[in-house]
Image (cartoon, rainbow, N blue to C red; front, top):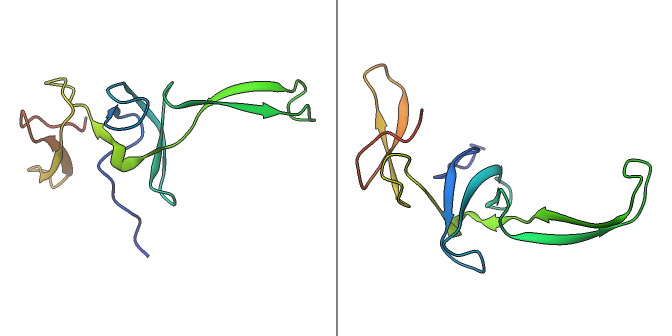
Length: 109
């Protein structure tokens, strides 16, 4: 079975479109393909109560990022600094890249 294709990748800057973090931007730390979610740096923070264990000597309350539905985030273009849809284009060398639908600039490095 082919891997799912998404409009965002790891290390992209995204803006949250819905939920309690609406309007905030952050960097994608991880894309969870099995559940159609992304983890964004310092957004959607939750508190996790943990017990002391061999791996984690200290127990207590740990704050960490919770996943956000991938449909609720949109890529932020580096050139125009706006949340935008992306399209795909093939370059002369045959590589496939994403481009910003608003300013027509290439998003991928």
